[in-house]
Image (cartoon, rainbow, N blue to C red; front, side, top):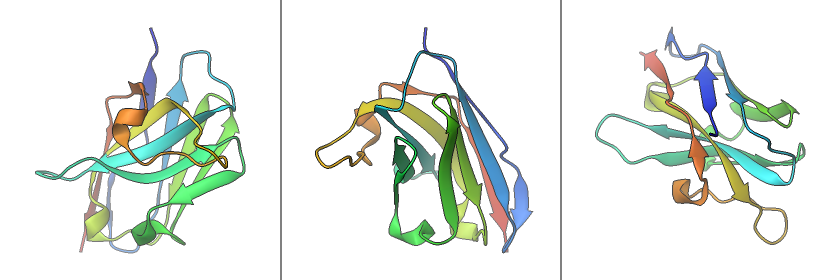
Length: 126
């Protein structure tokens, strides 16, 4: 059974940094997309960043320039988050297994990814 385990969530102040990690315990290679999603209390799950291979990276506008997604191997996903803001608060989920769209793009729709973890909490206080 596929299993994804996120770690690295914490409480920080505005302007702080966190590094989230996701270990994927299933056979997955670089031909699949991996992504980070988040969900604030009472809100919907939204895509934050995703990656296809090791080079094609995509970010939602509000985190562009502050977050960096990377894969140091096919089954380990990293999200470096700098200059954190209170609106970044939420449960962060790693999702995996989506096929790439034409042009090597990855979907920001959570239901495109068949595997996801339990999440790690990020809280940013002002």
